Length: 441
Image (cartoon, rainbow, N blue to C red):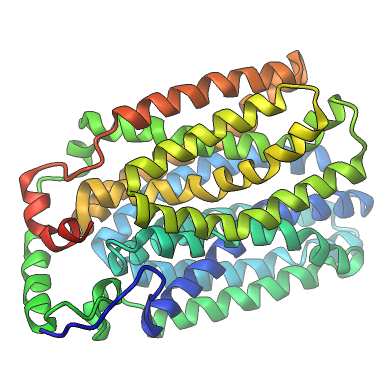
């Protein structure tokens, strides 16, 4: 057996490629479905497209995203996650090109056709980038890094805040009749990512001659034999969708990690109106958003590092506790506390996505991860989807201080459930199949 030292940040060259592909998938998801709309919708409105309709599409997209997650969860079980990931990214590139035609068709005087093209492009790209980033790439990365999952996913999810910090400015460069070129650019990136995933990525590192976690202490021949045995185990695993849905720990985990997604989307999507209500001016609020987005980029990786060093349960409790602290600060009228809350929010934002993957892996292990994750991911999508709506409705009708009080209660509930959550193998079969993983942990 080789005895080469490994560390949390050493992902290996092959693993690093997988992580970069996941990072780009997350960037594309955030850029295409959320961040670019800050520029796209107003520009199309100036060209004569009905913006009321465009703003209303996010609710439909959320529902489609949940259905798409369920469908692709089934497909990746029938095929492989890596092949489905490649398909999602390549198809994203194709439909981004279709989406790019919206402004040109509108300028050609075909308003209804332009709206149809926009809807098709937006809905399809929303579903495909959602499942590509948050289901399929997470699945592959979880397989590659069973104990270094925190660091790996931390780097991957840094794509979200990087998009938040850069997409609006980049999209603004193309504002006007040439808006479609922005979508052409992202379409090209999606195609490149998809093609590389197709020809390079595999669901498990053993299929690429690489080591799980890039840990060269593994006896590769013994690990390969165990991997083959585990693939046979998966054929008869009792952790079916039905079993997962009737498991109490699944629902405790959903509350624990789902509220984090709810708070992240609720806070960031209503950031502007909340601080306008408190007397801030728009330029200062944009600066605050930039600060939060920039800090969240290394913050995501830092939370992943904590996951490895402190353990998944402790890190999950910490992230939810940070949400409580940040929300309390924002319930005051003390401006310095609002700025102090920004890096805290950034850590919470960077960590909320990480914990969904880390908790699932820590409980169901490397091999049953797919079975559990295709259940928790659509459930989590429900929470993140309604976060925008609930916070927006409460804030609009009762004031954003009331909305933040609601979120404070939810954040406290998440801390309680994080404490209650057993972050350990769900049963003896899972532990037996993942003994190396849990021993290292």
